[in-house]
Length: 113
Length: 113
Image 1 (cartoon, rainbow over the protein chains, first blue to last red):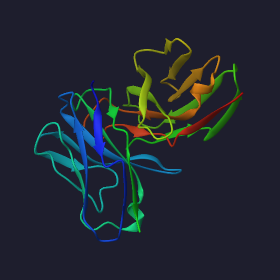
Image 2 (spheres, one colour):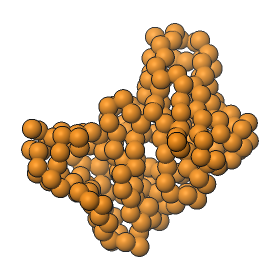
Image 3 (cartoon, rainbow over the protein chains, first blue to last red):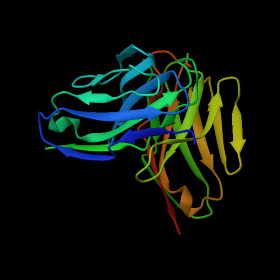
Image 4 (spheres, chains in turn cyan, green):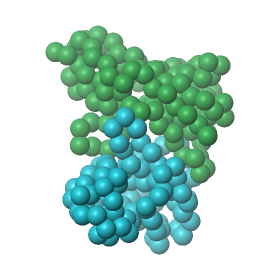
């Protein structure tokens, strides 16, 4: 089954403790991205990657890092999480930079205390 | 950059009635307009999309209309059913590249029995 998977689905952590949210897709998509979803703000892009070793900032990149060492994986790294990063995070992928259809993962709900 | 406005934020309709959600966009270069449905605890799922060379597209009970001159597009759901209850997001894109999709803030559709 073609899908985007994320882990963990739920995470509660404390301020300053480094964490990684994994994302993997099995559709051989080149383009992957991370969004955060907050009430009243909709979906905002954090980082995106157009291919292996090619990443760039989205609209709200502060406090986040990403890496793209393999085509299928695109982890989101929070080096020093803060409470304002409490949010619902979605990974997404599409075939290529110029493709239209985008597929989302199931989401990771992160709480930073 | 692109800005997408979505209205209403909440819409309550009687089962069997029609629902209409409206979006406007700012960038005349945008040429792809998808609609996503997000059910509780899940990631957004593409339900229908339209490209700028088409004015209307229909898929069973859902349809999308696009007015490029006025820069607005709408989602129409007819004969609403309880399973239509969800949050719906519109988005706009110029078809790839760094900007990806710009999302509206979402509409919470409630189907009253």
